Length: 65
Image (cartoon, rainbow, N blue to C red; front, top):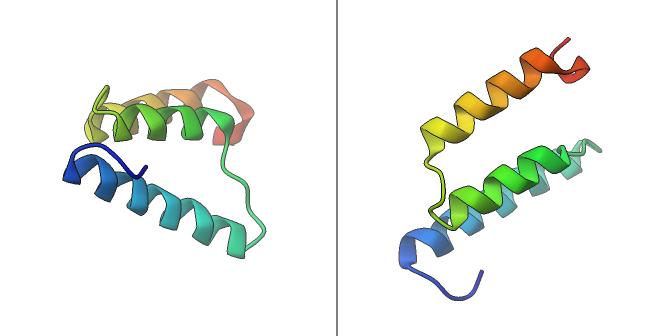
């Protein structure tokens, strides 16, 4: 994200770094995490809500096993 508030740009950079680090280990993040991270970057959800949604997602899916 090249535009937006300074906080949005910083969150975008942090998410890109974190997701990129997963790729270094040949890991792929879920599409759901990508959706949530975009919502977080856009200030639609805060990090606490993102974390709660991810925990629920992992409880509901095989990803949590």
